[in-house]
Every structure is written in C-alpha cells, then in structure tokens.
Length: 221
Image (tube, rainbow, N blue to C red; front, top):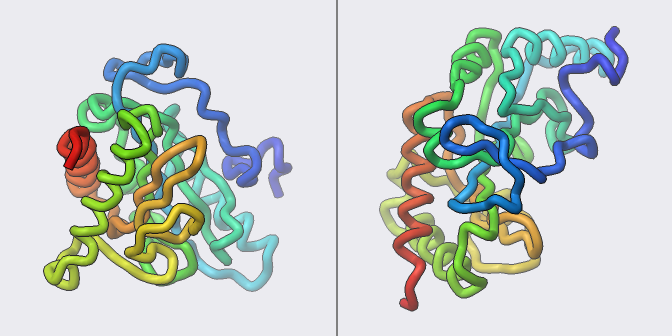
C-alpha cells in the first residue's frame, strides 16, 4: 500500500488553497491579479466496490493513477462517497477551460469503469464561481434566481441539463449547503444542479451558460 504522502488521492482537508489561478494561456497568476470570472469544477466518481476498506483504497489509487493528474486537477477523498473520489479543478479562466484545458481525463475515467450519477449521496458535478466574478451580493441573488427559474421550470423534467434532489434542492436559501445554488459567505458561488457528465462538449456548454448568466444578471432586474 502507498503511504498518504505517496497517495495520488489526498484527504479532503488537504484540498488546495486557491491563492492562484490559471489564465487563458495557462499562466499561473495570483488572485490579487484577478481580472475576469473564474471557474472551478468538482466531478465525483463512483468506483468498483471491493471487500474491505484497504482494498477499496488501493483500487481507487489504481483508478486515479490510470486517469493521470494534469496540472490543473487534484484528486480528493470525499466522506460523502462510500467508494470513489472527487476530481477538483483549480481556479481557471473561462478561456482556458474552453480552449486550453486537458479534458482527456474524462475518457480515461470512463475506460477504467468509473461511474457518475445524481442520486448516490452527494455524487454530482458542481461548478464553483469566484465571488469576485459578481458585481455585488445583489448580482449573486439575481444569478441564483435565474438558475432556479430554469431548474423549476416545467421543461426541467425533460431536460438533460438540470437535476434536483435532496443534495441540490431548487430553493433560495443562504444557510443550506444542499441548494441548487449554494452561496458560500466568503468563497464561491457553487452551482450544484447540473447533470454529471463525462462529455467535454457538454461541460463546456455548462460553462458558457453560466458565464452568459453572470453577464445577463449584472444589471438591476
């Protein structure tokens, strides 16, 4: 077995401190140089179940090693998942995520049998947006209401974009982590209601949609 120091998958408390971000050219920049909306994502994977905890941990490590670890990603154990782990990106500009990001890990995750879903614990696909991407708190509220309007629309049941369940409730609340749009007081705005996917093109559609919604909700409405 590998030691924790050698492990590809880190403990959740070791999650990277987002003091830096990657610009359109992949250059690492300080948050003090913030100039545009910044995005990060989390994709929670379910892996094969083995007979005991040690075997499961070893299997997860094998999966993570097969997927590889691009510079923009980190792998973390998530207590909400009985087996599997979370892939989390570091803060990136939209331009990098659309045009210069290495998304090949998605195919490798599928190849080794990792699964995604919407009803297994917190399992899902979440996008984090730096709060500084918004003009003020009122802008965040307008953004949230616009997303909730989509999730609560009659067409949502037919949509393959949005999901709603106990872990992404379609309500407007400031002190409930499990909302479709979870507003962290001092960190990010987390969109939790997007359907998980291994599709690079769909993830890019999600990101474009969220960026457009940020822009469209800037003014008073």
